Length: 220
Image 1 (cartoon, rainbow, N blue to C red):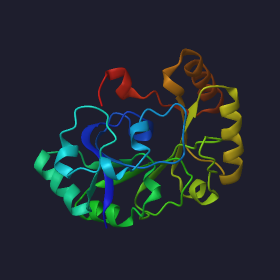
Image 2 (cartoon, rainbow, N blue to C red):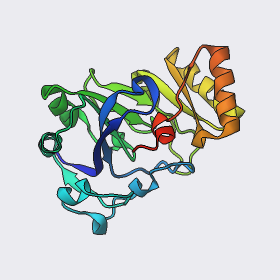
Image 3 (cartoon, rainbow, N blue to C red):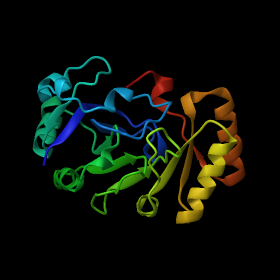
Image 4 (cartoon, rainbow, N blue to C red):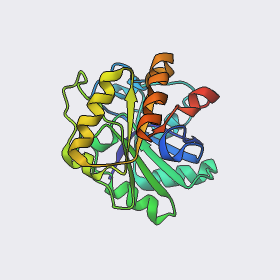
């Protein structure tokens, strides 16, 4: 099994339940959802002319649409060659659930890593039961994809981007479909009004705030 990889890097997880934990990020290429505020739009298209050898991807110094095919074995070899210490692997994108992630996650678990997937909930989630699923639902985006009931059911927690009151209402509608889940509210683009709304709602609902710590720290 091969996967289209945009980036592999080690940093701190800056969002959700694992905030502050060292993590290896594997960013996959490809996403049709079309979020207007997306900060990784360079991962949307999987253009053949942007394909590169994996070694070229690993030395990128800026966001780029270049990507490389990589097997789970090649990724594990990269972790070792780079001397990565983190034991959590975050598979993100793009939209990682466009792909069958079972072979990748099983290889990572077999090598002693734990896994977390960050997904929009618009594709069927194919992972082992041990993988932690963080669903960041994208409602009414340009791509026209609906949030799947199966994705809501599988989610271990929900990390919801919030810019206005309507986003809270959309989250309530989603939770009515799947029952109670741990919820993290994340202000879109760290906007002042969005942040104030998230803080107010978290206090009222006993939810948690996710502030994209990596952006405040100025790290990847």
